[in-house]
Length: 324
Image 1 (tube, rainbow, N blue to C red):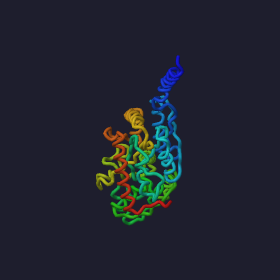
Image 2: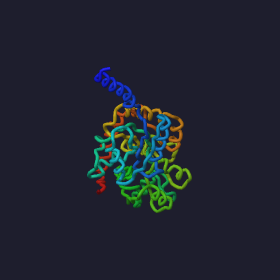
Image 3: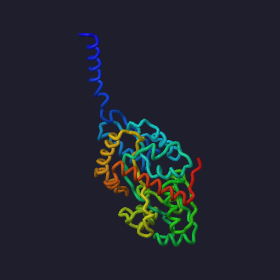
């Protein structure tokens, strides 16, 4: 065999054997889902539920890594600048939209550097009060606040509960002392101890305390009353659509991630959020999946854009700013 022919055949042979390696299906190694909060909170719990289900679906490890600090921006920045290959993902919530306006400058562009894979679940917020607070209904609470200076706890500036508190005060033309806490756990402890009066939080965080008679539920930021917390009035029915506030959670990938990878993940997530084994415990905690027509990546991009605009307006109207 002539040398040139032999060399050509050798190259051809190498390319044949190399082709399958280059076309390995996604995922073929461990995928990391970064969560910008400590372990144990609602976003971390959702991330671990999703990671477990994806691991079973793809027969590959999906692990959760908690990266805290910087008002969630350290974790977001890490994913925004990660390799766009689908092996580093971010599970975040409504705060990622609010942070665009809350912070004067961010080291990433939320819409340009990240792409939503899918909006996973959502839940309304519930306004609760300490158990010995005089009012028993939302109407009574509003009347009471006209003559009393309430202490409204917030789990940090710019959090969903902080924004909901400002909408409530703005729409009812009331005032209150807003008391900031570093997270929900110490806040709820003080609320149970009677050191603060009110708090907007998630049903999964507060329903057990309400059902045990340790807190009073006044209102819920949903179109309908909740079967989980029937005493809570619908803010939307009383005050209009501005009060429909959903604390959502979504999975993001770095922009530039191959469309095939996004579709693969999105398809798997759609299966996961239709699984009764996942939906049942979510429903028991007041959490629901998004409607099917809002699950596609394109719908996620549109929703992120609208949430950035919506919360940006609330933040500007109330002059909320986090200094860096």
